Length: 173
Image (cartoon, rainbow, N blue to C red; front, side, top):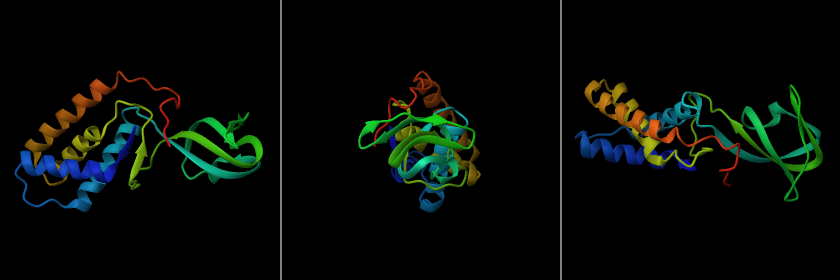
């Protein structure tokens, strides 16, 4: 499921202004909170993020050449066809030439992303927006509102946890 963090932040702003009577929303702070919520979902709650990138290969691709830090590589394509690959401690061994690599990664804290591709159909924009609303209230020291939004966030995570990791089967470009 592809999540747009800006949309999640906008949804959180809508929730907060309607249900908490907040008149002014710091949109930049709320976007940071939405990104933090997405990172938490991936790192703390086990909803992996997946990505695909095209890279030039001489047969060996050091993991450091990938734009994200891979946790697991599940597919390599060349000219639209799946090709053989092997994983080693510090590199991926595959065909020479231009290849497409699909892999699971964990985002870094503080990283701002517009689009995140979760490998779970259960993670929705609302999930990220509830987390963003909770974090935003906490940062503003609105503790009662934080507790309410955090409870909603945890509830939706609990319901979503039934969605098992599929090793890239939910991948969308």
